[in-house]
Length: 322
Image (cartoon, rainbow, N blue to C red; front, side, top):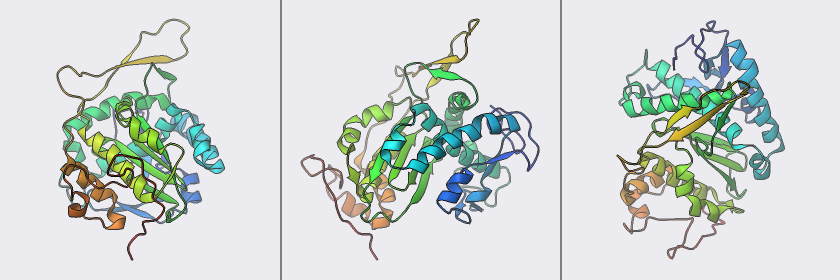
């Protein structure tokens, strides 16, 4: 794994400065959701517009990997609706979300080489995240190399549908770079992913995910679902290892196997309701729900997905405060 301002983000070959680049958020995405001019603040407190979020990419990777991927996803987005997104295969969806996540992460890492203000917690000094990044980069190569993941998917990806009532944001995205979490809202569909857990968080969230299937959720319920996944990713305590099977004559693709060391350490650190409540508070900022209200009952934090007796809950209205 190599990265730099003039090194292709995907294959690591040298690129021509300011010529060989791709947009982190695809042009079709910028156009469809009118994101030109919208800005994001980086960890060093500098500001960059969405259209200026670009990473170095060689012509081969751009034309043979990135552009075909974006064209495939753009066709799904043009149809719209949860059913259309559900037709997209898991590997393509993983690679599309991973491309945006890695593009933002790479932007942050390159900015840290000459920061406006040194971040309090620089990503380049986060040893555990950099270790995960090496594994992530291995599976991300499936964007340019034919790779089959044998009996696993590198990520946990969730698809949620949002009810139109009180849903005022056609586009929204957020991430947690250190835990490799990425979420994006496109009209009435929300995609939430932990990009390097081998699907373990999706397994752990199986009951909750099943309970929201076939339902259009209120935005405050979507935020709660995200809080659960983000907190689970924070507790996730292992880094998957990946191994390439020996290539035989005539093979047309690589086959990856995986291993998680669950002998010397727990897969998840212990769940603590106080920590989960802070995750809820962050996701519920729009509704101004504060920590004392969220954790009024320390044994059972506030929930809009479930009633007090654990039954799935329906919410039709919970307006954002003026």
